[in-house]
Amino acid sequence: MDISEWDKRYIEGYESVARNIPCVNGIFVAYNSNVDAIKHIGPGDVENLLRKVDADIVQQRIYSYPRQIDSPADFLARLLIAMKDGKAAEIPTYSTDIHEWLTDNLVFDEARMGGQAGIISNLLANMDLNNVIAYIPWLSPEQADYFVSSPNLLHPFVREGRMELLPPAEACNPDYKAKVNWIIEFNKGLSVKYAEDRIIVPRNNRLIISSRPPWVRIDMSDEVYEHLPEMGKTVDGAILSGYQMIKEEYEDGKTYRDYIARAVGAIGQLKKANPDICIHVEFTSIQNKFIRSAILNDIVRNHVHSLGLDTVEVANALNVLGYEELAYSVIKKEEDAIVALYEGAVRLLHELKLQRIHVHSLGFYICVVSKDCPIDVEQHLDSLLFASTTAAARALQGGINSFEDIKAGLDVPISTQGMDQIDKLGAYLIRQGKCNLEDFEKGCICTRNHDVLIIPTRVVDHPVDTVGIGDTISASAFAAVLAGMCSTRED
Image 1 (cartoon, rainbow, N blue to C red):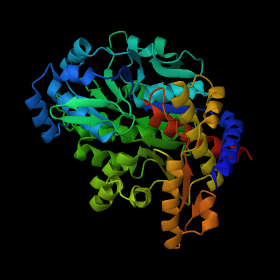
Image 2 (cartoon, rainbow, N blue to C red):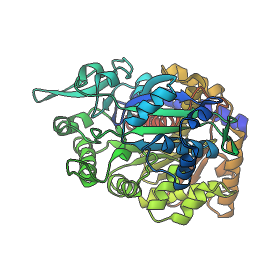
Image 3 (cartoon, rainbow, N blue to C red):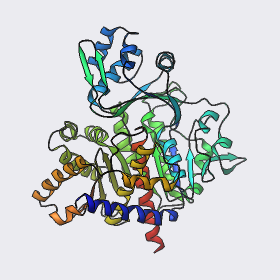
Image 4 (tube, helix red, strand yellow):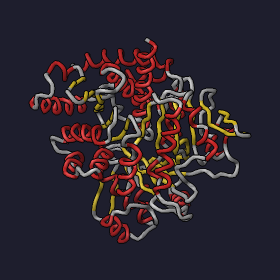
């Protein structure tokens, strides 16, 4: 298809999902939410911070590549690395000292809802889904204020042995404190002088300093855990995220095994009264390879239907599953990088025994689905086109406040760079005999073991911001998949 044909197919995909989205009974979303303190880095900001620390120590930290932020030098080292590469990164900090230093020396521009589950819950509620049930283990009054005030967004609360679904402001714990993350955004073309070098940022992106205070646990109260089966009956799907916060060991003697087992148990509880519930996990950057492996092998494999992740996260997943050479090919940005990304997505689908894996990259999406997935390839294609439209609308407007807002994404141009990348993949697949030109141009490739959906995406050249775009892509696509499943059942 050329761009005009894709434009037409985009409209069809949007209209199809718009018709079917009211069929979705609801979606359960857990676990991670926080307050995002956002700073858009401008000319001179980084140089000003560098004057407040020892430049030699920063250089040493760049060489050692800190995996967590313990000092201002660690922060500046990872910021300079991220800006030079133009890559998003999320780095944990276990101390409040960094938050205080940044507040004193940088000052945030705005604060808003952060964390995958928080962002996704607000998005789905504003998309007018019938029922969005959010669960945040550390729901504080301050955190509750960042959830949209909408009758379809509720939080479980157990009172006298009975589960109630209440607005977050009524379900919060007044004794809890908010978790605050810093989002440092930088734009393509920004120039930063460091020592004798000058960095020119190659693309819009961000560095996230993720706060991990000791009281943050990816867990669930016993009361809510016991009532999960009845909650599972009220929804068609669940989006689970935040597993990257699991640590190997805790101060109270617990280990990752306790929280992995609890996470798997929660999925089992949701399935008890609703064996057809569809479970999606939203992956993210996980520095600890041991935890990354445990999440993929112990939580995702055999327990989850759908996985969402970006290009770097595909490489990270492949790396811990033993596909190091393929992982390297995904991220080295050579001519065949998109081929490696496709091959990596296929490996992950089968290795982790998933029904669906959705990879979002700048300019294109790749979705590989198993033969036992309950919707057809056209419905999968609709879901990807709808997700791209939603993400474009969010980037263009800075947010989605109603389903009608999504339509603005249809006016965003389709990425010619994405089209070029897709053509490279098409040439490879045709040479390999995996499809013919006609099938590839339709965006749907059917093989004996799986089906592949590939689309060029709509890309905003100058987005209002980039925070939450990946979550928007995955959540809106998954909601559209559920809409397709529900409409198929009704037919």
